[in-house]
Length: 434
Ligand code: ADP
Image (cartoon, rainbow, N blue to C red; front, side):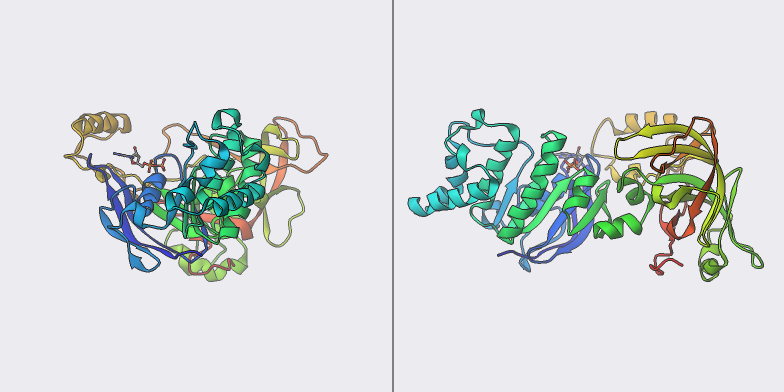
């Protein structure tokens, strides 16, 4: 059971002129579980609803099981959908809600009853089958909704933030259950979430969306260790990747260095082969990305580590770990914006001109002047913002605010992004690092 899904440059412009999805291309193999991840408003639901047939496709092509599906009605697609708000029939019992798709299909009552019991067993809700939705907790209702969605064994399963209205503990438990139930059906699944931890825990692969555009598609490990850009790097992983401004110097006759403001990282000779690749960005302001595990407090570097002096600004107790916030004199950085206001159709919204005017004043540009696009330099804060680096503290060692520490940076885990946020190191064509 299952069906491949292919999106070829799929796009959606709403009648208001708002372009919610931009030329998204991706392919899901039969039976694959893909997570669509991105911040609220980035177009995840729109994309899902286009696959379901609940939203028209305004450009590009959708293939279900290798057949063109753009114009298929929702009922003609063998697709089941689970939403955030469970939408159960309030007057029906849990058993009747689950059995509903089978009743619509005209299945034999006895067989339907057996199927309901089997699904309820798998979801751990057998004892709740005679209750109505009002007599169920949020987590139980969502299990019933899951049961209703899987019972007719769809080829494609679409889930739109199915757990986001539940509390954190329940979310973690239910997501593992969902995964096992869905895997048993063999359905190809697209699961939408804005929660990166959920995405990392669930997905065979994750597709990251920002402002309607696909940023990267890859395994959780690929997104974490080789993010395509600073946005993906900062969206995936907790604690968040440390991003600070830095400038690379790559002299012909000496080692490359990264200036972080008041301190410098001298890069190892082993990186010489990246010299030519990185020289194109030398002298430019870059974003330096360091995940917490790239940093440790010690004054005894290995061959891959380079020293910095850090000052403790905050010690954060998390129970299972202690996070150390330090400064090294570098300037804080954020992923550069990809949004250009050109995405809005000028004819679309009568407020647009006014809003643009206001926005351009806030941004310090006049209307008509060129606005930042994905290729422009990241806006620099107009006051010096000292960037904090976060790392995991060693167990059993206590640190004081203001304390100065020897910090080591593991250069193998260093990431560099250019002014538009694209990763330049590790070089995209040299995935193995150095
Ligand atoms: P997400 O699921 O990632 O939160 P959505 O797909 O719901 O995002 O929305 C993407 C963008 O499209 C948002 O800016 C939203 O305001 C806009 N949008 C959603 N539905 C409509 C609609 N019917 N008409 C116009 N704009 C819409």
